[in-house]
Length: 341
Ligand code: PBG
Image (cartoon, helix red, strand yellow):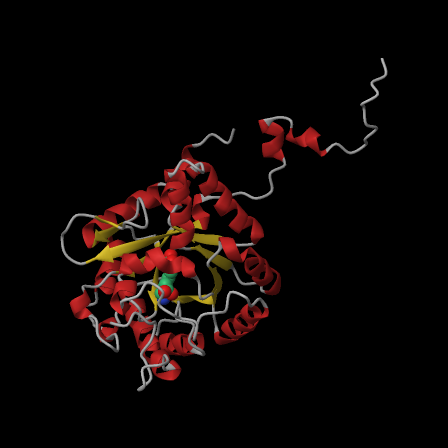
């Protein structure tokens, strides 16, 4: 019987969406636990894990608990962690001098993690914001109105050498000062750390989505305001070409991996970098991206596991080889435990 509603179609893309097996067969973006990097917050002392109100499920851990957490991440197939220290505010000063302390919390944390899980890739942030009373990523000019680029770079280069000596695999300058990648590379090489790689925060935007992170490391409170203004050094969210200028500089200065941050709102930038470099591209799904999914899920408005997966898939699909995400552990557990279908 002739059905008058029947379309005469040669192409019916839905044929390949018909069953779960067919859909899996033609899936082109694949998330793997080894693509994920877990950012972790560390505190001094022996206290219990400290919850971070604006980041449900994320805790500041003492060094022993941090090492344990790294072990369980490794078991789930997460091969890399990014460590962030939260300092006692009494250790902070205008110039962030605690960043160069030989006994710095971050250095002790790195050594403990390397001892506990030797193969784990450990990276650390190179920036002064956890150490300064004002919460900026560098030292200020005498009038206090700007971050002093060159003086900051000199400090960051020394900081990177300290971190390398403690055993980090990757240093990650997150400060956006001009010339820092080159200065860090030079300082590392001069100190016989040719093997320490640089993951440059190449396109780090002046984003409002860092708010919960600043709660976590206490850099917002230090400045007395939540909207710490970093527009004098971080990229303008309106700008696309500028990311490629930064990419060119970071590559020339010796970056091994280039990063875009935030991730989900900057998929176009991830794609731009992917198409413009042969280096690995990383993306940082930042605290605010994590928190907004949690907030909506709490209200019952979004499904957490589905949004988690979709947000990470999108970042990977845009061209990121690896993703820093606070969802790393849960996502890896899901990927490992889940039968593909
Ligand atoms: C600081 C730094 C920030 C983040 C990583 N390193 C915050 C900032 O620039 O103020 C943000 C990470 C996140 O929001 O998850 N150099």
